[in-house]
Length: 496
Image 1 (tube, one colour):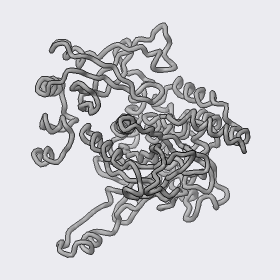
Image 2 (cartoon, rainbow, N blue to C red; image 1 turned 90 degrees about the vertical axis):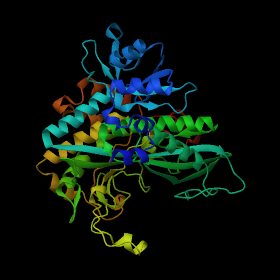
Image 3 (cartoon, rainbow, N blue to C red; image 1 turned 90 degrees about the horizontal axis):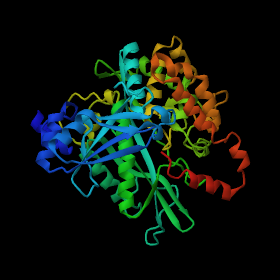
Image 4 (spheres, rainbow, N blue to C red; image 1 turned 135 degrees about the horizontal axis):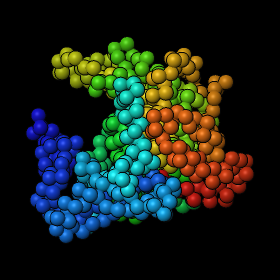
């Protein structure tokens, strides 16, 4: 089986070492460095702002390499986290071997590894994003016996001069192919890099958003990943954004994940699909359809929906996307395949068996097909400004809240909609600004702090950051001010 897996996997280290990434050891990394002529090592980590950072080493000797892989390095925590004071700012970063990948952009042969933060006593830094996420998953499993998996839909725009030969059609880009859609090769190149790095990619395609404005055309694309445990999903989303920016830059293009590019045109979301497992088995669907476990988790997402925006919608332009009568949600509700709902249950292959397979391929014999493990629950509010690790930690908190809530099934029943959610009266609404999002977070803080998942100081820091925008009445202040709106969009064009 291992030989078959190796023949199919594009992951460079898995192919070379002959073992899955989860089994990588220090000896494996040293052997790969020696055999592949690796001369540089990058330690990478996600800091308080949610962005990917880098510490670069030129490998000087075997002893030097062993020390880096064993002890990591010191960094200035006060420059990486708002809650770390300069008087006691030293932190350690230590690599996680399972995350190793060959850097596809470095001029010298370079190996990169994702790291975890530790304090002066060698204990995990409680407020570090990867540690919050790790604790969220552990607390979910300890209290419910379940683990959460996730995949992100990464939407983005690429900017270029207008093509006069095959002009794009505004808001008609969904699944278009070249030459009617532009820059698909940037998407494909990105996907090829990602799978060689070990990122689990599902597919890529052109998205709806085509915009022509002021001599530029802006073409929207999406890369969707595969469901993996939330700790891996967060790292993979951060890496995907980095790779996209690098590839676009090398083609002389600007890429943006911002929630709004042009007011009045489709923005970019970062929808998150989730899947719950118990004992290694997916539990959101069975032969009868959606399970009670799925409905309880949905109820949890809805209960904490307002405060989850504190991690998933972190800039003022996020709330220019979350407006009525577009596909972005505003009402806190859920539905089946309803794209106006905050939480959506997409098609999950329940009950179809092998009938589609055999209709499309008449030569295929009858066979047992169970696609129910593919059932996900999609949260549609987040966008590209999200602090991904904290967002997924928040979703794990919300899943736990729903699974343990005594009235979760009733809450899910009350919040279910079959029609356009914007037409249903009496539904609670998402926050309308970063300031309101901060209020929701502080109101819900006990859920996030339970079990020591989110440290109180981190919750306070996130609320303070959101309040600093002073955007509570921003829409009213900027109404009719095209220049002011354009300046705001430009300010947050490269968020996330």
